[in-house]
Image 1: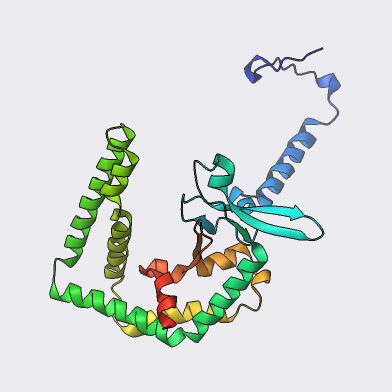
Image 2 (image 1 turned 60 degrees about the vertical axis):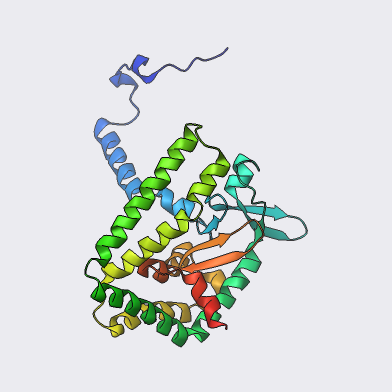
Length: 270
């Protein structure tokens, strides 16, 4: 017959000592051991979600969702990454149908790392230059930080206003894009500028020390295949893929310092 699951509150619990298989003290002890074990082996969600090399690192440039791992086994096993927005919620939700081959991505990353190491001097020069620019602006204008914050607040308010209007069906998607088209980039630029202002690095050497630490980590990579997700995340902030299959790699240190780093590397090749 069919069993109806009773709500826990309706369960009738009867204590019947004569049916106990295990003495109460023993039972308590066993529970304690199990408890302490589960604490030692606590598998956090974080650990599980970061099982694979690229877990939560590849972002879709179109919808912002992470790419997820798919495995196909034909003659060989192929590991590919696809946008979970497009694949989980449909093409209407996100137009990004790109499949990224894990092996190819590892190759791209390896090349990127060696390119970075080659460009080390230029990179450090560029970053130091950016900071000098911000500090100079700050020296010449005592209200620099205040003004940046004011601009940022104004932009965010405006963006929110139009997004609310769109939500309430007062404007179309096209009008929304027209009104807030460039604001996302501008907001990011201001936030980055503020990050740099807030750094208060007194000397260029401090900056070089911070950068050299990252370069050292990159030099120590013998094989990207061997890296863990956590190791990769210490160096890489995100890998963005757009619907045309273009891959942009962002270094964590640059994001932390408030720099848009993808531009940086391409600058060095000129």
